[in-house]
Length: 409
Image (cartoon, rainbow, N blue to C red; front, side):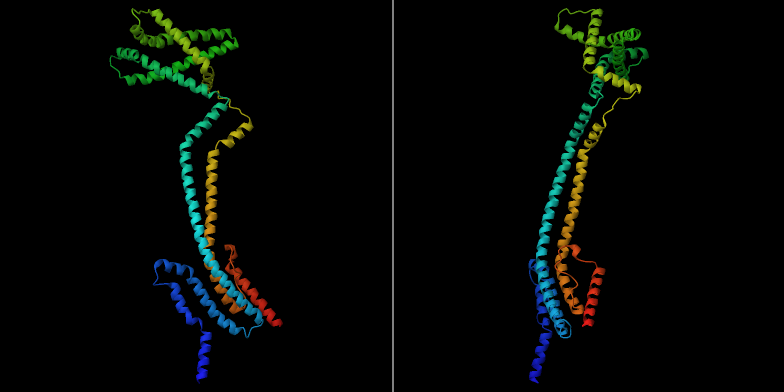
């Protein structure tokens, strides 16, 4: 009886040997009473491998017992050893995968931080440099265009300058005249705004008359030359008497301040005003107004502007018009692709390590039931984890092959 009792106890210990250490192993890996850092490390690195090891031990017992009744016992036992080998590789891959995941995570965070910093810096540069880039592109278009935009801008600017000067000089005269007519003292603002508008068109019109007169001389049209010449004389008279005379009158006190007994007659004032008109018109005409005035007249008359360019030049401008915008959008697209790729790598690094151990444990179960493995370990990428329907078909085919081989024997 003693011998039978001892043999029975030995047999029970042999069949239930995982129960001897599984409680202590789970308690050790759970580490409830350890410091929080040590507890987290044990649960992260040891808990899942401990459960897989205990499961392997429990499955190995019936697997060895059923090996007696199985065909191809040698192959089955070898497959059982290989399953333990796969579990060992899975545990080591799990530990290395956890370390690799944290490494990838740190690298990805650093890359993301670098991308954010560079993106913010690029955005700041873009905001700061955008006006200069737009100005540079606009200047390239202005310089490369067949339309004399610089002359147009200078002509309008000079007309604006003359208008401001004449508005300031003639405002007292107009204000006094309007007050005498209405009998009321008008405010300066009420006079200067319409006076400025009126003088702006007067000065611009004088350049238009001069441009028409020059065109008539080039065409040698005598009748048109005489007609435009008469109009130009009237324009000269009006501007000298009403505009440039007032300007010279404003300078007379300055001459009197630095010259003793300075006197000038009305004809002298008109002569100086006429010379000023001729000098200013000549300088401005030959510098820019000769090119800007015809363009302004074409726009006013609705004739349009000839901006014909070659198709090659148009295509070149089309390619370079939004270089900055395209580059910025391409950079955003590249960053989005990088974030997606890094996300997939992080997901694979996070999922594969624990799935290696779970797959090794499931291989123990499928080995006991069907005599073959369900998963091919180790997993190197997420695509190695096959869908459930494929796994079911695979295990069904293996079972049928096993039955076929058994019946043939």
